Image (cartoon, rainbow, N blue to C red; front, top):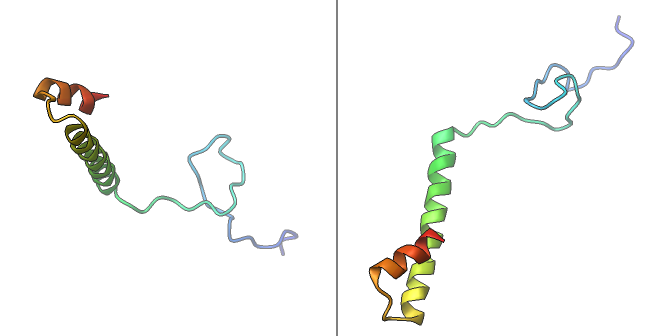
Length: 73
């Protein structure tokens, strides 16, 4: 019989260092990487579109090159 009580965290591995450290409540990611990347790209695109729309509203004389600079930064 084991002298240590059972813990639900026993046997759960994690990608952090040191490998034998206990990380309470760690759960592995179950979301596919493609879903994460597409969500991030969508949010960034929406943010850039809002910035460009506001820039065009604030200064209607902006040229395409100016908008490209705004989108880049």
